[in-house]
Length: 107
Image 1 (cartoon, rainbow, N blue to C red):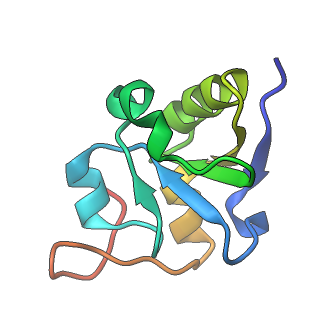
Image 2 (cartoon, rainbow, N blue to C red):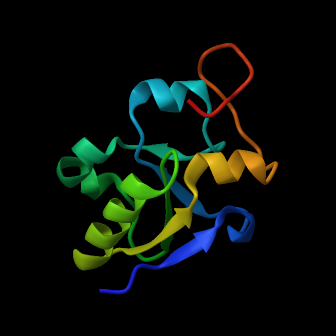
């Protein structure tokens, strides 16, 4: 199976981003308007992920999101891994928000 992947800088605006990191990582900093489903919950919650449109999957450095992307594509979604994860997203100067009340950062 081919892994679909794009660099953080190449992610178009106004797409569906799925963040598969743990809750503490999510709270520290995430893509604005992203959907949060930790990787360990994804199989049970996959029905919450929209179908019929590309889903861009992100984690901290790209490993968990690569696993999620392969699985999502296998079960019928159109998933694309964001290579380098939130570390690349932050390094590219892309927008971030946090749930902590502090400036966002990649945990």
